[in-house]
Amino acid sequence: MSKLSDRINNLAESQTLAMTKKSRELQAQGKNIINLSIGEPDFATPDFIKDAAKQAIDNNFTHYTPVAGYLDLRKAISEKFKRDNNLTYTAEQIVVSTGAKQSIANVILSLVNPGEEVIVPIPYWVSYIETIKLAEGIAVTIPTGIESNFKITPEQLRKAITPKTKMIVFSTPCNPSGSVYSKDELKAIAEVIIQYPDLYIISDEIYEFINFVGEHESIAQFDFIYERVITVNGVSKGFAMTGWRIGYIGAPKWISDACEKMQGQFTSGTSSISQMATIAAVKADPSVTIEMRNAFKKRRDLVLDLLKEIPGIKTNIPDGAFYIFFDISSYFGKSFENYTIKNSNELSMYLLEVGNVALVSGDAFGDDNCMRFSYATSEDKLIEAVKRIKEAFLKLK
Image (tube, rainbow, N blue to C red; front, side):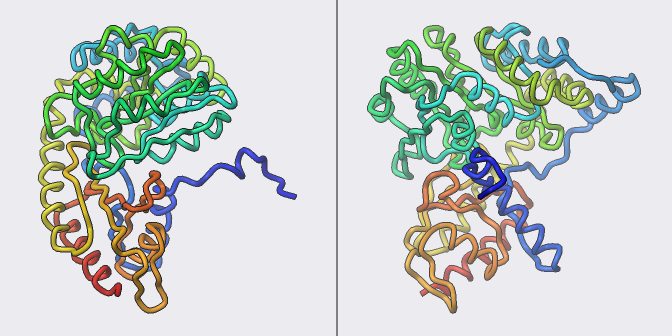
């Protein structure tokens, strides 16, 4: 009999982190692996943010912090929401957490009861499903594909709702597809959800500043749905601050109070130094993020052009984030030496072991026909990576 709990035995390991771990192990053995599995900007945190952290250390911000975050930070986030998103959240409606992942977990664990359903569009970020499992909820997925630019329709959403539905969780810009919902598309989704008085929305907007098609749109901007939305964001992606571990929510106060209560029993307040650095980030003019966004757009275009040279794969044009979620199903059933490809996971292991490139299989995101390619690395590495992928694919017959 297992000595571990059913809870941990039923929890899947994050496949993005698992592939990154495997890549590092192979690199430690001396193998030249190009790791495109991790969702992390390769840029350094801007100097003005690092300077704020250094100043915080010198000023002895080294003690326990309030569970929901320093008031100065929550006020700065409140101002950021108003400035960038036209959203009105008071400081009391904001909870700062150790990354947006914890923010999402706080909300799901605070709202979802055992047996209640949470709608999750496919493809989804890997941790959504597992966090719903921890809450003993039931994930109800909605399939999409390249032809719909990996976005759900209002009709699909309406059909997925049942008397047990408690919530929908989605990201825009999306990890892993890079899809960005327009204002009209978000309004159409909101108009469906408002018809169900006990249905809530987690809107994961962590890739807000990596948007290639115009202004970011938040679903909470519509007054009629505002009280049902939990807006999740953070500084990891837009400000290249992954290691600082700061995420936050804006939500109706009864939900933010619940999340503060939950967090108080798990982690308490997040790092004091990281919080002080984040004040500098969210107070900065958003134009400081443009250089990095433009670099990602240039890399996206480069990779899309290079991928056209590989027969049998299909791509869309992602409008944000730093991923390409491409269809590789035409390679299923093909073989090379002792490898026979039956699914995306086997193909990702084949690419790692034969091509020395780490991607993440689509089944981690709910779509086994695809793979996620992160282009958050240098152009030289991207060119070499696609060259290796092409050579490995051409060996499959």
